Amino acid sequence: MTTNGGQAERHYDAIVLGVGGMGSAACYHLARRGKRVLGLERYDVPHAMGSSHGVNRIIRLAYYEHPSYVPLLRRAYELWRDLETGFGERLLHITGSIDASDRDGEVFHGSLRSCEIHDLPHEILTSEELTRRYPGYRLPEDHLALFQPDGGFLLSERCIVAHVVAAQVAGAEIRARERVLAWEPAGDGVRIETDRGSYSGERLVVCVGAWIGQLVPEVMGLARPERQVLAWLQPTRPELFEPDRCPVFNLTVPEGRYYGFPVFGVPGFKVGRYHHREEQVDPDAMLREPEAADEALLRAFTSRYFPDAAGPTMALKACLFTNTPDEHFIVDRHPTYPQVILASPCSGHGFKFCSVIGEILADLTERGETRHDVRLFRLDRFAASAVPAG
Image (cartoon, rainbow, N blue to C red):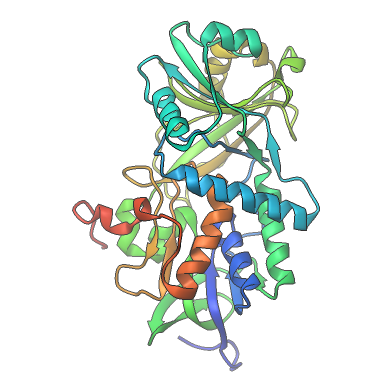
């Protein structure tokens, strides 16, 4: 690698690649511990090319995916509250959350199991009871819904800004519109070359989402970028979809698993389908402009199950999921270079954890271990199925 214009190569305690949800939190937690931190972002801060744009992201405690997420979520809530207090702006909005499926479905029973194991307050509602309480909902008669009062949403782009501002106040150097071209181990540290210069560091933290396979070929076969589209539809009865009358939701119906939000920030009820049209993509070449088929899929769901929300389309936005085979995260050291820590992909449900993942990444960077239970996210769980690089 070469230095930039003959200037001395700059050295850092930690270099963070990607300053989105996870990377901004990592920069913040490392900087507040007194580390000399460099955050490198290929696009703007924040930007609309990855997985964190589109106004907001759901946060929920009743976690059907696995009960071991709940302790991490409890810490995430604490850290989000700390962040918004320091930033002086509300970032976390509580609406309650609905997790629903048919009576035998995984979403309902998994969410109930998490609540029971971790003693979370909750209520079980039939479809009729749910509609009586929240008239915007019209789920199938055989569905059961779990209401958990602590659910809500985070203002995702503002959370990134808050983490970046706090990191900068603590001394971190953040550089946007600077693309990483290559990295390599250098003794016990690393060296980075970008399109603007070269840097060295003691530790490297890789949080680049859908681009992780390009920078870490060892996980390319385990990180599958997927095109995702969200819709905002103007309700015909807007009073039913205000934040105090419409909990965020995560539910399965015969058409698939969907998620959604009350009207906030954009004049529309926000809805998405997990794995949307199941399009695996190259993040540098994916179709960014939503199509008529994207809108039709989301409108059909809304018309059937939230009919009073299915008015004119206000906005459509494309983003990215990056999925592992089991849809749990990867948070671990590089399999060959322990000075490199990986935090991606997050399989479409990671933003709510950014605050605590930032703390975990700082732990792993600083001392190679963390008090948090991250066994579920270890890379070696894929050892038998990993796809070789190249």
